[in-house]
Length: 458
View 1 (tube, one colour):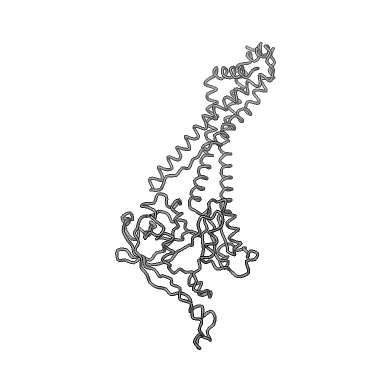
View 2 (cartoon, rainbow, N blue to C red; view 1 turned 45 degrees about the horizontal axis):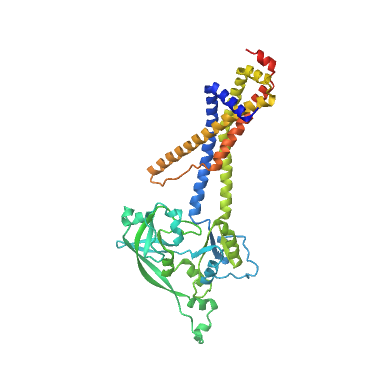
Protein backbone atom coordinates (compact mmCIF):
# COMPACT_ATOMS: atom_id res chain seq x y z
CA UNK A 1 0.00 0.00 0.00
CA UNK A 2 1.36 3.39 -1.03
CA UNK A 3 1.99 6.13 1.51
CA UNK A 4 -0.54 8.40 -0.21
CA UNK A 5 -3.30 5.77 -0.05
CA UNK A 6 -2.38 5.01 3.57
CA UNK A 7 -2.65 8.68 4.49
CA UNK A 8 -6.00 9.11 2.77
CA UNK A 9 -7.46 6.04 4.46
CA UNK A 10 -6.18 7.09 7.90
CA UNK A 11 -7.55 10.62 7.47
CA UNK A 12 -10.96 9.35 6.33
CA UNK A 13 -11.20 6.93 9.25
CA UNK A 14 -10.32 9.67 11.75
CA UNK A 15 -12.98 11.97 10.28
CA UNK A 16 -15.72 9.33 10.47
CA UNK A 17 -15.56 9.13 14.28
CA UNK A 18 -14.67 12.78 14.70
CA UNK A 19 -15.95 13.33 18.24
CA UNK A 20 -14.34 10.23 19.72
CA UNK A 21 -11.03 10.80 17.93
CA UNK A 22 -11.06 14.49 18.89
CA UNK A 23 -11.55 13.62 22.55
CA UNK A 24 -8.70 11.09 22.36
CA UNK A 25 -6.46 13.67 20.69
CA UNK A 26 -7.43 16.22 23.36
CA UNK A 27 -6.42 13.71 26.05
CA UNK A 28 -3.00 13.44 24.43
CA UNK A 29 -2.80 17.25 24.23
CA UNK A 30 -3.56 17.58 27.94
CA UNK A 31 -0.82 15.05 28.76
CA UNK A 32 1.71 16.85 26.58
CA UNK A 33 0.62 20.22 28.01
CA UNK A 34 1.24 19.07 31.58
CA UNK A 35 4.66 17.73 30.56
CA UNK A 36 5.63 20.94 28.74
CA UNK A 37 4.29 23.20 31.51
CA UNK A 38 6.26 21.40 34.23
CA UNK A 39 9.48 21.21 32.23
CA UNK A 40 9.15 24.85 31.16
CA UNK A 41 9.00 25.88 34.81
CA UNK A 42 12.12 23.83 35.61
CA UNK A 43 14.04 25.23 32.63
CA UNK A 44 12.80 28.75 33.31
CA UNK A 45 13.88 28.67 36.94
CA UNK A 46 17.27 27.28 35.91
CA UNK A 47 17.77 30.03 33.34
CA UNK A 48 16.64 32.64 35.87
CA UNK A 49 19.09 31.39 38.49
CA UNK A 50 21.94 31.12 35.98
CA UNK A 51 21.24 34.61 34.62
CA UNK A 52 21.09 36.22 38.05
CA UNK A 53 24.22 34.44 39.28
CA UNK A 54 26.15 35.14 36.07
CA UNK A 55 25.19 38.82 36.10
CA UNK A 56 26.32 39.08 39.71
CA UNK A 57 29.89 38.67 38.47
CA UNK A 58 30.71 35.80 40.81
CA UNK A 59 31.06 33.08 38.18
CA UNK A 60 33.60 34.85 35.99
CA UNK A 61 35.84 35.87 38.89
CA UNK A 62 38.79 34.42 40.78
CA UNK A 63 39.24 35.63 44.35
CA UNK A 64 42.89 35.91 45.39
CA UNK A 65 44.52 36.19 48.82
CA UNK A 66 48.01 35.67 50.26
CA UNK A 67 48.81 32.12 51.34
CA UNK A 68 48.82 33.22 54.97
CA UNK A 69 45.05 33.54 54.56
CA UNK A 70 44.59 29.95 53.38
CA UNK A 71 42.05 29.18 56.05
CA UNK A 72 39.69 31.67 54.55
CA UNK A 73 40.00 30.17 51.09
CA UNK A 74 41.26 26.59 50.63
CA UNK A 75 42.20 24.56 53.66
CA UNK A 76 44.06 21.88 51.76
CA UNK A 77 45.95 24.18 49.41
CA UNK A 78 49.72 23.67 49.33
CA UNK A 79 52.46 25.92 47.99
CA UNK A 80 53.05 25.33 44.33
CA UNK A 81 56.40 23.92 43.23
CA UNK A 82 59.07 26.55 43.18
CA UNK A 83 57.03 29.09 45.09
CA UNK A 84 58.94 28.60 48.32
CA UNK A 85 57.69 28.26 51.85
CA UNK A 86 57.14 31.98 52.45
CA UNK A 87 54.04 33.81 51.37
CA UNK A 88 54.39 36.27 48.55
CA UNK A 89 52.96 39.72 49.35
CA UNK A 90 49.77 40.63 47.49
CA UNK A 91 50.97 44.04 46.35
CA UNK A 92 50.68 46.25 43.28
CA UNK A 93 53.34 44.27 41.41
CA UNK A 94 51.36 41.05 41.88
CA UNK A 95 48.20 42.84 40.74
CA UNK A 96 49.86 44.02 37.54
CA UNK A 97 51.21 40.54 36.88
CA UNK A 98 47.73 39.04 37.21
CA UNK A 99 46.27 41.68 34.90
CA UNK A 100 48.64 40.49 32.12
CA UNK A 101 47.33 36.91 32.24
CA UNK A 102 45.40 35.70 29.18
CA UNK A 103 41.63 36.39 29.21
CA UNK A 104 41.87 38.46 32.42
CA UNK A 105 39.76 41.60 31.95
CA UNK A 106 40.52 43.43 35.19
CA UNK A 107 42.04 42.96 38.62
CA UNK A 108 40.76 45.11 41.46
CA UNK A 109 41.14 45.06 45.24
CA UNK A 110 38.38 44.65 47.75
CA UNK A 111 38.19 48.06 49.41
CA UNK A 112 35.97 48.33 52.47
CA UNK A 113 36.30 50.60 55.46
CA UNK A 114 34.02 51.72 58.25
CA UNK A 115 33.66 55.46 58.71
CA UNK A 116 31.42 58.41 59.61
CA UNK A 117 28.93 59.79 57.11
CA UNK A 118 27.70 63.34 57.68
CA UNK A 119 24.26 64.27 56.37
CA UNK A 120 22.25 67.30 57.43
CA UNK A 121 24.76 67.88 60.21
CA UNK A 122 24.26 64.44 61.77
CA UNK A 123 26.89 61.65 61.83
CA UNK A 124 26.06 58.08 60.81
CA UNK A 125 28.41 55.11 61.07
CA UNK A 126 28.47 52.99 57.93
CA UNK A 127 30.60 50.72 55.75
CA UNK A 128 31.98 52.17 52.51
CA UNK A 129 32.75 49.83 49.61
CA UNK A 130 34.45 50.40 46.27
CA UNK A 131 32.50 49.25 43.18
CA UNK A 132 34.34 48.44 39.91
CA UNK A 133 33.10 49.84 36.61
CA UNK A 134 32.26 46.31 35.41
CA UNK A 135 29.53 46.11 38.06
CA UNK A 136 27.45 48.49 35.92
CA UNK A 137 26.03 45.51 34.02
CA UNK A 138 25.62 43.40 37.16
CA UNK A 139 22.19 42.13 38.10
CA UNK A 140 22.44 43.81 41.50
CA UNK A 141 21.87 47.22 39.91
CA UNK A 142 18.88 46.20 37.76
CA UNK A 143 15.89 48.33 38.64
CA UNK A 144 17.87 50.69 40.85
CA UNK A 145 16.54 54.21 41.38
CA UNK A 146 18.76 56.89 39.96
CA UNK A 147 21.83 56.14 37.87
CA UNK A 148 25.17 54.37 38.00
CA UNK A 149 28.46 56.27 38.42
CA UNK A 150 29.19 58.70 35.62
CA UNK A 151 32.89 57.85 35.76
CA UNK A 152 35.49 55.78 37.63
CA UNK A 153 36.73 58.85 39.55
CA UNK A 154 33.42 60.67 40.00
CA UNK A 155 32.69 62.12 43.43
CA UNK A 156 29.41 60.21 43.54
CA UNK A 157 27.84 57.57 45.71
CA UNK A 158 25.05 55.01 45.57
CA UNK A 159 23.32 54.24 48.85
CA UNK A 160 21.91 50.91 49.89
CA UNK A 161 18.21 51.20 50.70
CA UNK A 162 18.55 50.29 54.39
CA UNK A 163 21.11 53.02 55.01
CA UNK A 164 19.14 55.50 52.90
CA UNK A 165 16.10 54.95 55.13
CA UNK A 166 18.25 55.95 58.12
CA UNK A 167 19.01 59.27 56.48
CA UNK A 168 15.48 60.12 55.33
CA UNK A 169 11.95 58.77 55.58
CA UNK A 170 11.68 59.07 51.80
CA UNK A 171 14.89 57.55 50.37
CA UNK A 172 14.11 58.79 46.84
CA UNK A 173 14.39 62.39 48.04
CA UNK A 174 18.11 61.84 48.76
CA UNK A 175 19.04 61.59 45.06
CA UNK A 176 20.92 64.74 44.06
CA UNK A 177 21.87 65.70 47.62
CA UNK A 178 25.34 65.59 49.18
CA UNK A 179 26.91 63.69 52.04
CA UNK A 180 30.31 64.15 53.64
CA UNK A 181 32.58 61.15 53.96
CA UNK A 182 34.93 61.42 56.96
CA UNK A 183 37.72 58.87 56.74
CA UNK A 184 41.29 58.18 57.82
CA UNK A 185 43.85 58.51 55.02
CA UNK A 186 46.78 56.11 55.13
CA UNK A 187 50.15 57.79 54.41
CA UNK A 188 53.33 55.74 54.31
CA UNK A 189 56.11 57.13 56.48
CA UNK A 190 59.40 58.01 54.75
CA UNK A 191 62.16 55.43 54.84
CA UNK A 192 64.61 55.60 57.75
CA UNK A 193 68.04 57.09 57.23
CA UNK A 194 70.95 54.74 56.67
CA UNK A 195 72.84 56.49 59.50
CA UNK A 196 73.40 54.64 62.74
CA UNK A 197 70.34 54.60 64.97
CA UNK A 198 70.45 56.24 68.38
CA UNK A 199 71.84 54.13 71.25
CA UNK A 200 68.51 53.53 72.88
CA UNK A 201 67.18 52.20 69.58
CA UNK A 202 69.82 49.43 69.36
CA UNK A 203 68.10 47.45 72.06
CA UNK A 204 64.84 47.36 70.17
CA UNK A 205 63.81 44.21 68.38
CA UNK A 206 63.41 43.96 64.63
CA UNK A 207 59.67 43.94 65.06
CA UNK A 208 59.80 47.22 67.02
CA UNK A 209 61.88 48.78 64.27
CA UNK A 210 59.29 47.79 61.70
CA UNK A 211 56.56 49.33 63.82
CA UNK A 212 58.35 52.67 63.66
CA UNK A 213 58.52 52.59 59.85
CA UNK A 214 54.84 51.95 59.09
CA UNK A 215 52.30 54.60 58.14
CA UNK A 216 50.52 57.57 59.62
CA UNK A 217 46.76 58.21 59.67
CA UNK A 218 45.43 61.63 58.68
CA UNK A 219 41.75 62.58 59.03
CA UNK A 220 40.16 63.64 55.74
CA UNK A 221 36.77 64.65 54.39
CA UNK A 222 35.21 64.07 50.97
CA UNK A 223 31.95 65.44 49.61
CA UNK A 224 29.93 62.96 47.59
CA UNK A 225 26.74 63.48 45.61
CA UNK A 226 24.05 60.82 45.94
CA UNK A 227 23.07 59.61 42.47
CA UNK A 228 21.21 56.38 43.16
CA UNK A 229 19.47 54.07 45.61
CA UNK A 230 19.92 50.31 45.21
CA UNK A 231 17.47 47.84 46.72
CA UNK A 232 19.73 44.80 47.06
CA UNK A 233 23.16 44.47 48.56
CA UNK A 234 25.53 44.11 45.57
CA UNK A 235 27.54 40.87 45.67
CA UNK A 236 27.43 40.73 49.43
CA UNK A 237 29.54 38.14 51.15
CA UNK A 238 32.85 36.54 50.36
CA UNK A 239 34.82 38.15 47.58
CA UNK A 240 32.16 40.76 46.92
CA UNK A 241 31.64 44.23 48.30
CA UNK A 242 30.88 43.02 51.80
CA UNK A 243 28.14 44.70 53.72
CA UNK A 244 28.72 48.01 51.98
CA UNK A 245 26.00 50.58 52.57
CA UNK A 246 27.76 53.50 50.88
CA UNK A 247 29.06 52.54 47.44
CA UNK A 248 31.67 54.62 45.60
CA UNK A 249 33.65 54.04 42.37
CA UNK A 250 36.56 51.63 42.76
CA UNK A 251 39.19 54.04 41.40
CA UNK A 252 37.97 56.79 43.71
CA UNK A 253 38.17 54.37 46.65
CA UNK A 254 41.79 53.57 45.76
CA UNK A 255 42.60 57.24 45.36
CA UNK A 256 41.29 58.01 48.87
CA UNK A 257 43.86 55.56 50.36
CA UNK A 258 41.60 55.00 53.33
CA UNK A 259 43.06 52.92 56.17
CA UNK A 260 41.60 49.42 56.32
CA UNK A 261 41.71 46.63 58.84
CA UNK A 262 44.45 44.75 57.01
CA UNK A 263 46.85 47.73 57.31
CA UNK A 264 47.28 47.22 61.05
CA UNK A 265 47.64 43.49 60.51
CA UNK A 266 50.50 44.05 58.02
CA UNK A 267 52.33 46.27 60.50
CA UNK A 268 51.99 43.75 63.32
CA UNK A 269 53.41 41.07 61.01
CA UNK A 270 56.51 43.14 60.51
CA UNK A 271 55.96 44.31 56.95
CA UNK A 272 57.36 47.59 55.70
CA UNK A 273 55.29 50.64 54.94
CA UNK A 274 54.48 49.30 51.48
CA UNK A 275 50.74 48.77 51.00
CA UNK A 276 49.54 45.20 50.53
CA UNK A 277 46.05 44.18 49.51
CA UNK A 278 43.93 41.99 51.75
CA UNK A 279 42.47 40.32 48.65
CA UNK A 280 42.10 40.85 44.92
CA UNK A 281 39.42 39.88 42.42
CA UNK A 282 40.56 38.84 38.95
CA UNK A 283 37.70 38.98 36.47
CA UNK A 284 37.97 36.94 33.27
CA UNK A 285 36.13 37.12 29.95
CA UNK A 286 33.96 34.04 30.50
CA UNK A 287 33.32 31.39 33.13
CA UNK A 288 35.18 28.88 30.95
CA UNK A 289 38.40 30.90 31.47
CA UNK A 290 38.24 30.73 35.28
CA UNK A 291 40.09 27.41 35.63
CA UNK A 292 43.12 28.52 33.58
CA UNK A 293 43.36 31.86 35.38
CA UNK A 294 43.03 30.18 38.77
CA UNK A 295 45.85 27.73 38.01
CA UNK A 296 48.11 30.53 36.79
CA UNK A 297 47.51 32.61 39.93
CA UNK A 298 48.17 29.61 42.17
CA UNK A 299 51.50 29.15 40.40
CA UNK A 300 52.40 32.72 41.40
CA UNK A 301 52.18 31.72 45.06
CA UNK A 302 48.71 32.89 46.06
CA UNK A 303 45.56 31.26 47.36
CA UNK A 304 42.55 31.30 45.05
CA UNK A 305 38.87 30.60 45.22
CA UNK A 306 36.14 30.42 42.57
CA UNK A 307 32.54 29.26 42.36
CA UNK A 308 33.04 26.59 39.68
CA UNK A 309 32.22 23.78 42.10
CA UNK A 310 29.07 25.58 43.15
CA UNK A 311 27.90 25.85 39.53
CA UNK A 312 28.46 22.12 39.01
CA UNK A 313 26.35 21.31 42.04
CA UNK A 314 23.71 23.77 40.89
CA UNK A 315 23.46 22.12 37.47
CA UNK A 316 23.16 18.72 39.15
CA UNK A 317 20.31 19.91 41.36
CA UNK A 318 18.41 21.38 38.41
CA UNK A 319 18.98 18.22 36.34
CA UNK A 320 17.37 16.10 39.07
CA UNK A 321 14.61 18.69 39.44
CA UNK A 322 13.86 18.62 35.70
CA UNK A 323 13.87 14.81 35.74
CA UNK A 324 11.29 14.69 38.53
CA UNK A 325 9.10 17.26 36.79
CA UNK A 326 9.34 15.28 33.55
CA UNK A 327 8.31 12.05 35.28
CA UNK A 328 5.26 13.60 36.91
CA UNK A 329 4.31 15.38 33.68
CA UNK A 330 4.58 12.12 31.70
CA UNK A 331 2.00 10.40 33.89
CA UNK A 332 -0.81 12.34 32.23
CA UNK A 333 0.53 11.32 28.83
CA UNK A 334 0.58 7.67 29.87
CA UNK A 335 -3.06 7.95 30.92
CA UNK A 336 -3.85 9.50 27.54
CA UNK A 337 -2.24 6.50 25.81
CA UNK A 338 -4.95 4.31 27.38
CA UNK A 339 -7.49 6.44 25.55
CA UNK A 340 -5.69 5.73 22.27
CA UNK A 341 -5.83 2.01 22.91
CA UNK A 342 -9.54 2.20 23.73
CA UNK A 343 -10.30 4.29 20.63
CA UNK A 344 -8.44 1.99 18.23
CA UNK A 345 -9.86 -1.19 19.75
CA UNK A 346 -13.36 0.22 19.29
CA UNK A 347 -12.42 1.12 15.71
CA UNK A 348 -11.52 -2.55 15.05
CA UNK A 349 -14.97 -3.69 16.18
CA UNK A 350 -16.70 -1.05 14.06
CA UNK A 351 -14.55 -1.64 10.98
CA UNK A 352 -14.21 -5.41 10.88
CA UNK A 353 -16.02 -5.58 7.55
CA UNK A 354 -13.78 -2.85 6.10
CA UNK A 355 -10.69 -4.73 7.24
CA UNK A 356 -12.02 -7.92 5.63
CA UNK A 357 -12.58 -6.11 2.34
CA UNK A 358 -9.05 -4.69 2.42
CA UNK A 359 -7.58 -8.13 3.00
CA UNK A 360 -9.77 -9.65 0.29
CA UNK A 361 -8.46 -7.03 -2.15
CA UNK A 362 -4.88 -8.06 -1.39
CA UNK A 363 -3.91 -5.96 1.62
CA UNK A 364 -1.36 -7.77 3.77
CA UNK A 365 -1.25 -7.95 7.54
CA UNK A 366 1.58 -5.42 7.38
CA UNK A 367 -0.61 -2.96 5.43
CA UNK A 368 -3.42 -3.22 7.99
CA UNK A 369 -0.93 -2.75 10.81
CA UNK A 370 0.49 0.32 9.08
CA UNK A 371 -3.01 1.78 8.73
CA UNK A 372 -3.68 1.63 12.45
CA UNK A 373 -0.19 2.89 13.22
CA UNK A 374 -0.82 5.85 10.91
CA UNK A 375 -4.04 6.69 12.75
CA UNK A 376 -2.33 6.46 16.14
CA UNK A 377 0.62 8.53 14.90
CA UNK A 378 -1.71 11.20 13.49
CA UNK A 379 -3.48 11.54 16.84
CA UNK A 380 -0.10 11.72 18.57
CA UNK A 381 1.17 14.40 16.19
CA UNK A 382 -1.93 16.60 16.46
CA UNK A 383 -2.15 16.06 20.22
CA UNK A 384 1.55 16.86 20.64
CA UNK A 385 1.34 20.12 18.67
CA UNK A 386 -1.78 21.22 20.50
CA UNK A 387 -0.28 20.17 23.84
CA UNK A 388 2.88 22.24 23.29
CA UNK A 389 0.71 25.29 22.58
CA UNK A 390 -1.41 24.73 25.69
CA UNK A 391 1.70 24.06 27.80
CA UNK A 392 3.29 27.30 26.60
CA UNK A 393 0.10 29.22 27.42
CA UNK A 394 0.02 27.64 30.88
CA UNK A 395 3.62 28.69 31.49
CA UNK A 396 2.90 32.24 30.37
CA UNK A 397 -0.16 32.32 32.60
CA UNK A 398 1.89 31.20 35.61
CA UNK A 399 4.52 33.83 34.81
CA UNK A 400 1.87 36.53 34.51
CA UNK A 401 0.26 35.56 37.82
CA UNK A 402 3.64 35.46 39.53
CA UNK A 403 4.59 38.91 38.23
CA UNK A 404 1.26 40.37 39.39
CA UNK A 405 2.00 38.96 42.86
CA UNK A 406 5.53 40.40 42.81
CA UNK A 407 4.47 43.82 41.56
CA UNK A 408 1.97 44.14 44.41
CA UNK A 409 4.94 43.75 46.74
CA UNK A 410 7.14 46.19 44.79
CA UNK A 411 9.41 43.42 43.48
CA UNK A 412 10.83 43.23 39.93
CA UNK A 413 9.14 41.07 37.32
CA UNK A 414 10.74 37.76 36.35
CA UNK A 415 10.35 35.13 33.63
CA UNK A 416 9.91 31.73 35.28
CA UNK A 417 8.75 29.76 32.23
CA UNK A 418 10.83 28.93 29.18
CA UNK A 419 10.01 26.65 26.24
CA UNK A 420 13.18 26.19 24.14
CA UNK A 421 13.09 24.58 20.70
CA UNK A 422 14.46 21.27 21.94
CA UNK A 423 11.53 20.96 24.36
CA UNK A 424 9.04 21.51 21.52
CA UNK A 425 10.68 18.87 19.32
CA UNK A 426 11.10 16.48 22.24
CA UNK A 427 7.49 16.83 23.43
CA UNK A 428 6.01 16.22 19.96
CA UNK A 429 8.36 13.29 19.32
CA UNK A 430 7.53 11.79 22.72
CA UNK A 431 3.82 12.21 22.03
CA UNK A 432 4.13 10.38 18.69
CA UNK A 433 6.24 7.61 20.25
CA UNK A 434 3.71 7.06 23.06
CA UNK A 435 0.84 7.06 20.57
CA UNK A 436 2.57 4.48 18.35
CA UNK A 437 3.30 2.33 21.39
CA UNK A 438 -0.36 2.58 22.40
CA UNK A 439 -1.42 1.57 18.89
CA UNK A 440 0.78 -1.51 18.87
CA UNK A 441 -1.82 -3.87 20.37
CA UNK A 442 -4.81 -2.63 18.32
CA UNK A 443 -2.74 -2.77 15.10
CA UNK A 444 -1.57 -6.31 15.79
CA UNK A 445 -5.10 -7.38 16.63
CA UNK A 446 -6.46 -5.89 13.41
CA UNK A 447 -3.70 -7.52 11.36
CA UNK A 448 -4.56 -10.98 12.78
CA UNK A 449 -8.24 -10.65 11.86
CA UNK A 450 -9.53 -13.49 9.62
CA UNK A 451 -10.85 -11.92 6.39
CA UNK A 452 -13.63 -14.56 6.01
CA UNK A 453 -14.96 -13.88 9.52
CA UNK A 454 -14.57 -10.15 8.96
CA UNK A 455 -16.69 -10.24 5.79
CA UNK A 456 -19.39 -12.17 7.62
CA UNK A 457 -19.47 -9.68 10.49
CA UNK A 458 -22.61 -7.51 10.65
